[in-house]
Amino acid sequence: MQHRSQRITVVGAGYVGLVTGACLASIGHEVVVVDRDAGRIAGLEAGVMPIYEAGLAALVSGEIAAGRLAFTTDLAAAVPGAAAVFICVGTPPRPSDGHADMAQVMAAAGEIAASLSAFTAIVVKSTVPVGTGDEVEALVHARAPAADVAVVSNPEFLREGVAIADFMRPDRIVVGTDDARAAALMAAIYRPLNEAGAPLVVTNRRASELIKYAANAFLALKITYINEIANLCEEIGADVEDVARGIGLDPRIGSQFLKAGPGFGGSCFPKDMLALMKTGQDHGVPLRSVETAVAVNDARKGEMVRKIVRAAGGSVAGKTIAVLGLTFKAGTDDMRSAASLVILPQLQKQGARIVAHDPAGMGQAGPLLPGVLMAKGSMAALAGADLAVILTEWPEFAALDLDAAARIMRRPILVDLRNLVDPDEAARAGFCYRSIGRTGREAELRVPAEAAE
Ligand code: UDX
Image (cartoon, helix red, strand yellow):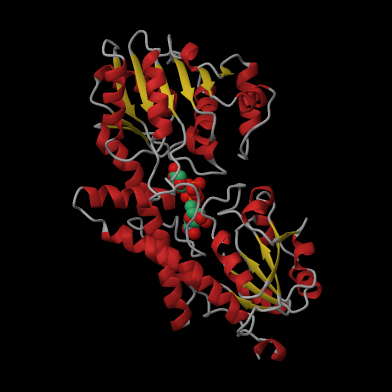
């Protein structure tokens, strides 16, 4: 079937806006991405990506060359004639209370309202608290009472590192609107993905807004659950990887997001959990499972510190710790709510000297982790260290030459907070090895006598 190309404006050339804009162009639409940051726009036109995301630079330059994607700082000029204007601006946590700050969303909506011409769908893709669509609609109607407009919710489910694949092959496309014209337009925009198999879920706006939070909170609950099961595994002598496999094969549970680790982080889960908690409290429906998961996840960082200190023989004072991985997960340079930001300062406070390596995150991490020395490679970080900690699941750490690593360290002690390394191989290389929830398979930690004092 021939797909009709739609004219689409995307407001915000950040993570979500760029991926959305480039992907919508690649399915045949005519897309303009707007950002008020002139330097960012000039960079994008020259092929310089402001964020680290696999495949994005090639996609953007390809779509520019094909004439389907353009960039501008002029929002007023980019709105008239667009069938849909996607709001993809940031909703950072407010410093005052940690809840999502809607200032950029409302500012964008106000500016769009001032330039509306024919029927336009204003599509809120930024993650916004339930009810924000109503507020955007009220603002637009107040600013432009005569405008023919529908405000639509269309949450994103993009994982950093695989965002393009997540956009192009989504599990579902969620559209929240009561307006039939807007629903038809959204169906037309997403038709190529829908025809390729992605179900289109059309709901009212509030349900759509809630779907985003409910999905992320559920995933974060799942992670928190397996982390607590891992704690139990350590006490009873079971392997959490076996338990995760054993429960994950039940399709009602599913095997994804059952990887135990140092706790969830990133730009979405922690912020979205807080926003959902607040929505629940505001409506007199406290979400106690979500509140508990947040508390358990916060406490987890301290547990990881204690695990590291125990592995060091009871104290890290005066010791050099090599930290492999700083970002909140692999495949990104993003440091937002990374476990390293809590764990490393606590180790420093206890007198440890920290040398770290991260394949992508050292630039972002440097200013956030004062006193942490950044090493060019894993081996450089490990050289002379008293203990090594794997904090992020980068594939290069899984492929570490354990024999060489054990030789180059002052003491071969490895605390693997992502279960990347095989316990038997670590033991064969001479490591005293500790991981998450795997005492069932771990070689007993042989703490060197002098470290155990
Ligand atoms: C998440 C959602 O997955 C995505 O759908 C949403 O739109 C944005 O938020 P992202 O923040 O990129 O994406 O990261 P994700 O891969 O979901 O991981 C989040 C955190 O959970 C990371 O800290 C990760 O290390 C941790 N995690 C994930 C685990 O500890 N175990 C797992 O099994 C999965």
